[in-house]
Image 1 (cartoon, one colour):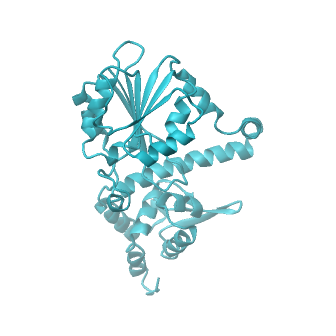
Image 2 (spheres, rainbow, N blue to C red; image 1 turned 180 degrees about the horizontal axis):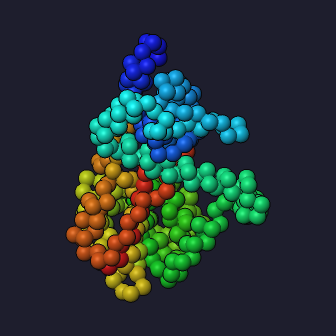
Image 3 (cartoon, rainbow, N blue to C red; image 1 turned 90 degrees about the horizontal axis):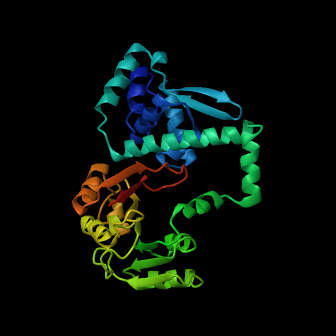
Length: 316
C-alpha cells in the first residue's frame, strides 16, 4: 500500500480491501497467527501475511511474538479515539453475510485445533496418550466403533449413496443396506467398493421417487445430496414414507451444507441450492410428518475449503 504520510488516510486505505475487513472482524474477537487467519479466510498464507502487514503498518492491529509464532489482534483500547470511531462505524455498516458466518465457524475450529495442539504438546499425560493411541490403533477406530450403537437388525437406506462411502461404514453393523443412486457409474463404483459386502442391495433410482415399499426400512441417511435436488422437500417426504414407525426405528439422518453464498457451485458442480438454513430444513421435516428433529452445525475442519455442514436427525 502506498504511504500517504497522513495516518487517517493510511487507515482508510487499509480498510478498502474486503479480506482486510474480514480479518479485522475476526482479530477484534481473537488473537490469531498468520496461519490461523489464512485458515479462516481460506487464502494462501503469503497473501494473508501481506494483508496483515498493511493492517499493522496502518496501526489497525498489534503484533506479539509467542515462541516462533506472531499473533495479531485488533484492540479497541489501543486505537486512537479517531481510529476507534472509524472502525466502529465501518464494522457496524458491514452487512451480515455467509462469508462472515463461515469466518466465525472457522475461528471456532481454529481455536479448537489450537487447544488440541496445546494438549498434544504440553499435556504430559493426555497429549502423550492421544498420540500413542493414534500411533497404535489409527485415528478412525472411535468413530467406526460408535456405529455399533445402531441396532444390528436394522435395514438402512443410503439415499444418494454415490460411490458408497456411507454404505461401506454401515454394512458391517446392520443387517441390510439399500444403496440408492440415480447415476449408473456411481453405483458401479459403489458395487466395486462393496463387492465383499453381501448385505448391500443396489438400486438405481431418484431419491425423490424411490421404488421402495412403504415402511420398509428402519433408518435412512442422505449425505450431501439434498442440495442437488430440485425439490428437497419431496425427498424428505419420501424418507418419511419408507421409514418404519415402530419404537426401535424410524430415523432419518441428513448431512448437508449450511446456507452459503458460493454461487459458482451452481455452475461448477450443478448445485440446485446454496445450502439450507435451519428454519427451512426444519419446515421440510415438519411438513413430511416428522415429530422429533434435532439439528446442529458440525465443527469445521480448519483445512476444509468448503462451506460449513450441519447434521439433522429426525424421528417419527
